[in-house]
Length: 218
Ligand code: PRP
Image 1 (cartoon, rainbow, N blue to C red):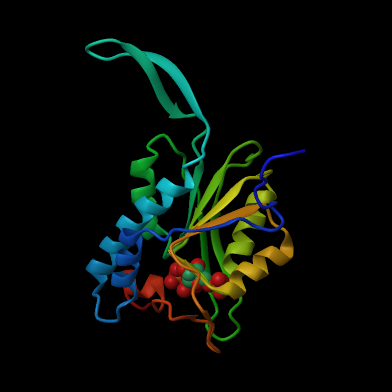
Image 2 (cartoon, rainbow, N blue to C red):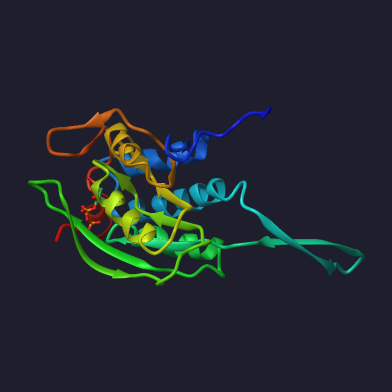
């Protein structure tokens, strides 16, 4: 069976983007002095980098095109992913992802984590009924305990999805281990795997609450 093998899905691929520009945007997001407008702008730009890397090995279809000078091969994404921002915080990634992949469809999942129990409470879902054969990108700035992401991925796998990518600005090791424990068909693309979760379920060093930092506390 020679040749290198990628990690199996059950072991969960984790791609941590170490690019200096990604680190710089994440630094802006981490800093407590960054206001909401600057936080949103940094998240927008980081999303472009994360999506760019997430699609690096995506299959393309080719078609001959004419330039003003000659014929050549043109390239398009063969199977654009369904984009699924997790409300609220994932909304801050949706437009930028859509700009990069204009022919992508978009679904939505609404979820809020109970601050005491840390359990996710779903409040809306709008997803295509059949996701078999369709790649899905879940957009959420933060993977903390992993509860929200696990719930979202289950909604997707119930609809037949087998190729899910979680696009997160940052992640906690505990959340990655939680997802690994379920053997869910997901890989993670992130700008950082941080140190840990604190007793309140916040990522350390983290950036606080990505929803509150973008939109204010509700
Ligand atoms: C945050 C974040 C994730 C979730 C991560 O959302 O955007 O959705 O928590 O936590 P978990 O991995 O422990 O489940 P939050 O519940 O604060 O809602 P919001 O996006 O409306 O602010």
